[in-house]
Length: 116
Image (cartoon, rainbow, N blue to C red):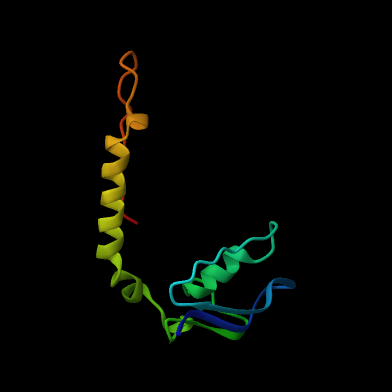
């Protein structure tokens, strides 16, 4: 089975602070993982390295066999249509849910939807 996410010795240092220290992770295709830990444990830093928002200080990370440092907007854009379709489906469910109905006495809430 292929790993969709794989890191080896992934580290990130901000000046003198080690935000992430030697993360080794393998996420097989079809698996569901959660990053759990206290504030400052490096969860967000790890995700930002995987998305190439931050570069690692040391180590390496791969997403679907591609070095995370090579991932750019185009790599994420290839899945934009699928994300938009899922989001629109989710909005339709929320709109039709009885829990989303506003009480008659209050004016309806103006909602704004944006694709990021």
